[in-house]
Figure (cartoon, rainbow, N blue to C red):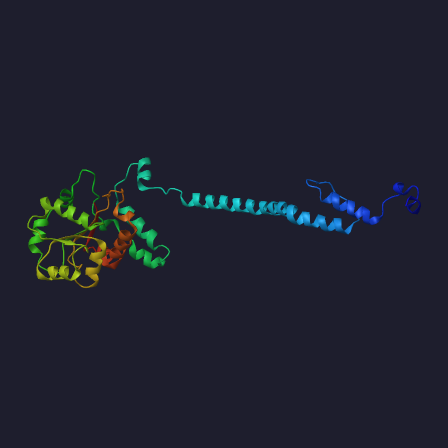
Amino acid sequence: MADELGDQWWQEEPQQPVEEAAGLMEVDKPNDGVKKKKNGKQVKILKRKKTESGDNTAKSKKKKQPSECFLEKVVEEDTSVKKVKKRRKKKISDILAKSAPMRGVPGDLQKLLVQHFENKRSVIEMEELRLPEECFLPPSDSTHTLSSYLKEICPKWAKLCKNHVQKKSLLILIVCSSAHRVLELIKLLNAFKGDGKVLKLFAKHIKIKEQIKLLEKGVTHLGVGTPGRIKALIEQDGLILQPLKYLVLDWNWRDQKLRRMMDVPEVKKETIELLEGGITASCRAGSMKLGLF
């Protein structure tokens, strides 16, 4: 047999199939991360299987990193937006802490009307809203009560009450921000009203038809109410403005949140509409006076 194979058969190089088999054995070794020969087809197939099973998972992990970074950025942007929304608004108490509250003067009302209508009215219409100084009553100071203030601006109250006989009308109208404040002011009028009849004019628990009947039934001298209900009574001909001598705004009083009546948007809007609906015209005509209490 040695003669058939040759004397030196063990020294010859192995044939190609033996190399392929050796390559297969080397690739199948566990924990072998060294690159193998690239000539054999089977070696390439085995390498592809390895990359598909092991390397692809690593690549997939690497691919997730950019998306994770993107999500982190989005979260950071969202938190920054939320921080902007949660910024604390300035309260009236913060503003008042820096400066002492000033009592209202006629110029404050003039400024309020100009700011409200300056972009909505023509120049001629704006002039009609301007009130001369003669239209205003002297402003109240901090020592005044409501009764003492009314006694100062209307010293002949008893005589006016005696001569007033027209129904559906008032001599003095006090405008304030809420029904609760109306009841408080009516109590403060005891030292002033004398024989005059006082009527509360607000919408809470009282129907407007009932108030119209009360105004038609007898003579009323003094009314205290909210601007929304007073405006509605005028529009429904339940209240006539011609005999009205004094209109007083409860300007300086502040509620639990330290807001004045003109600091409440709804009350401010209704008060301006009430003034525009005949009050300013009567003041310019000289038949009515405006006061800020």
